[in-house]
Image (cartoon, rainbow, N blue to C red; front, side, top):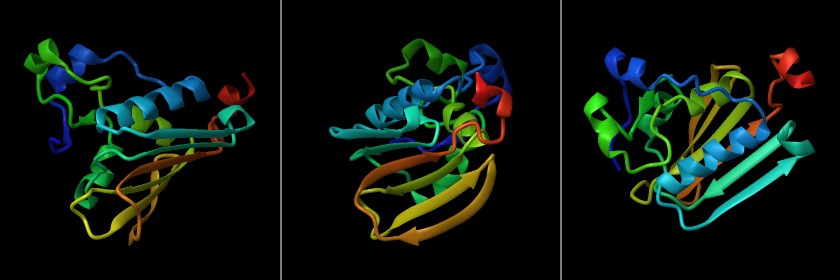
Length: 160
């Protein structure tokens, strides 16, 4: 899989579709599409309270390397395209590089990921867009994405 990079402004302007997390179903959609793009053959989805209190997506895809984990949560950071010319041949479900940033801005996120080549996995916690923890842990290959308290810091969205 290609390395994750931040898109240039020209490409950002072309694809800016305002990828915003509107409801729990949109979080599930984005994370399942990421799992499919990571070549997962098994994906599990678990939710509590309609996804507001808890969402867990687990896959057996390619995982994310430790040096790419932080970058994956930045706006417009993507492994799918490099420039505006790549837009004519997109072969993935997601490509804008906005989903993880948007999800982590309005929830408490825990990411556990491991590539098949790595000896250890990585656990990364980010709350309201602020990094809380990054550590190496034992983990199976693939990615588990846990979303807690969706919209906890945006009361207007929580009540709608």
